[in-house]
Image 1: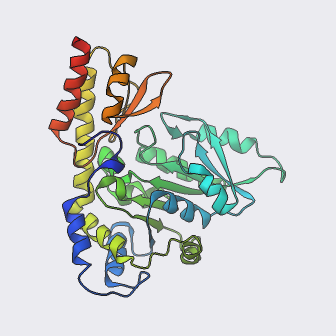
Image 2: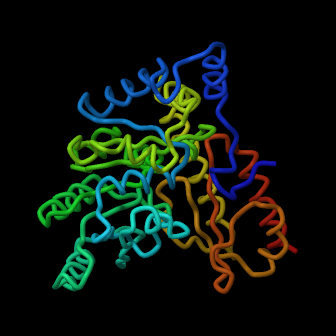
Image 3: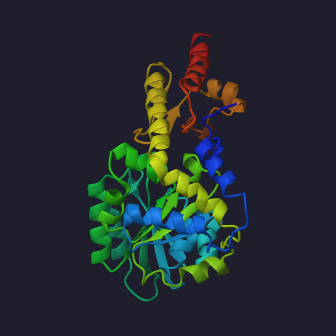
Length: 339
């Protein structure tokens, strides 16, 4: 059964599975010295520029934590919005020994004003030193930073001697939402380091760490080894990225999931007792439902309950979401409304 529980619940795109099977036919050099990893790195360099460094890891937490750990010292802090998942289970603080500092935002996004307020609060060496600002694109509530917003944040961050990291678990959905290229969204706006997601958009597993400052991440390959993310059979990740980046598969998958989210949003707005909570810009929808509806549907895995007290649910569409999937869920809601 397909659900809107998460895009992590989706299937793997057939072209990704085909790529895994193709690289499984013979032995290859381990630990990233294989032909598939070299080809995948070159594909990223064609997108972002020949001077970027690219490293592959297994999951989004590893991409964020390992990438940021190359940018920050234990006496420094990483600034995130208050609903950020960057420090899940305090992993970043455990691995880097640095501190996470949270600031308020608007529409799921960090603002320059919130950064100014935070920086003013840091006065002496008794406080941790700010070093990295980490934003999520698309955000945890499904909104998207515009190019102007990222550029302005980047300029402010660099003017204050800080660095900018982007958690791009749904970076492709964000690019499609804005109708811009990945290069324009990231490199041209001045981002220092990007965690590039694939798992949520049709891959089986695997994320990429992309560094736009080689001096910053010159020791990253050693950090990856120390943090147990140097994959011996790395070709099974990098081969996926070859297929993912070829023929704009990343874009086609994100277009499909974003489109399904818009259709689902429109259908939900037509149901009287359903209230859409946040702006729907990517593939994520937050809505308020009657409590009795949630209780009757919660075991069907249609959604994730994000606030039990306020009866708010989250739905995420995927590249393999269909009109039939949307119609089935909407029909259930209409049945409950008419009963």
